[in-house]
Length: 276
Image 1 (tube, rainbow, N blue to C red):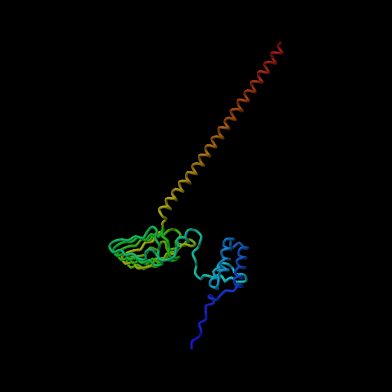
Image 2: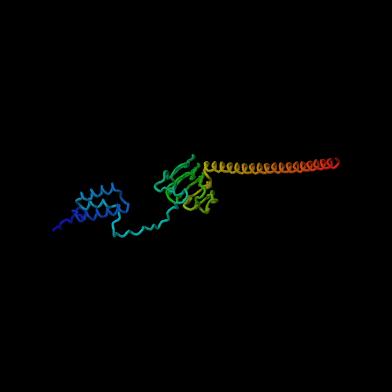
């Protein structure tokens, strides 16, 4: 014995009352500014043409239904990267553009614009490798670079602001610890360097890009020019004031001498009148 198949509710026929309820939601949406008149007319025509609940549901799918309770916000238990600054745009997610590299009596480079995967593994045997992260994007907020250097070396360059943690082991070799433990900027990625070095080494250095260094040099030159211009203006202003002071002094001295001569001429005229 088999049970009769229960039809899907979305395939049931919609009634006139159902269509009127949807039309009322559309009228409220127009009044609240959620729809313009063109959208309202289009959806209203679709509403009255709908025959089933499946055809009726998309009309108000992006509109709030009166009396409905909003779902609670989703709280993430993972720390998201900070949206401030430029780091948020460099943590892009996804897969890395390169996940491994090998140098056997040769070399390899990973530099420029590339995406660092969550885990990058490299091997240098009688050779060397260069991993430059200054212009790279990151697939996650924390990435791991696993280095194996046997009678060879790997040089890792990170930009300022990135936190570096070094956990590699060296036997007759070593891992550079100078940049480990430096506090990173908010939202910046974290780079964990691990691996093994035998008669070899893994270096870590922190450097700005060539463009950033060039811009810093230009900024210093501009600042020096501003200081020199301000000093030149101050000297010119002091010279102008000194000249004005000299003019006032000369004018005052000449004016005083003229008054004395005028008094002398008056006295001479008085003496002449007395003698006459």
